[in-house]
Length: 122
Image (cartoon, rainbow, N blue to C red; front, side):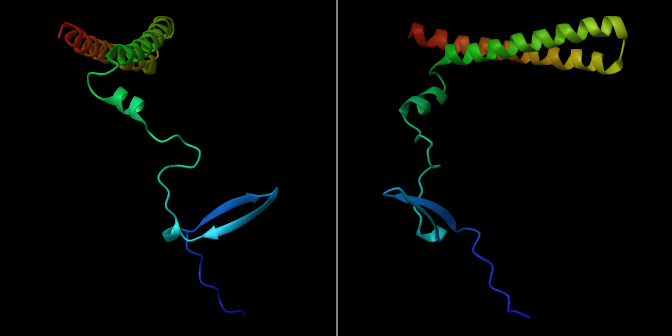
C-alpha cells in the first residue's frame, strides 16, 4: 500500500503561462498571489461608481423599472386572460403576484423620477 500524499492546497491557483508560443501550466500558492479583481474583468471605475450612487443617473434607473413594469403587466394580462378561460387556481395567484410587481415597479419609477426632478431644480 502506498502512503497517502497530502492533499493539495485548494487555495492554489493554476496559471497558464504563454511565452514565445509555448504554453505551460504552473501551480502557484494563493499566499503568493496578489489579485485585485477577476482576470479579464475591468476594474470598477468612476462611471460605475457614479451610476450606483443615489441621485446619479436616476432617469436611466427609472427606465430599467419601466421595462420591468411592462414585463409584469404583460405577464399579469396573460394570466388574467388564461384565468378567465380556465379558472385554474395558480393563474389567479399569478395575477396577484404580477399585479404586485407592477405596483412595486410603479413606486420605484416615481421615486427615481422625483429624485431626478429635485436635482434639476437645484
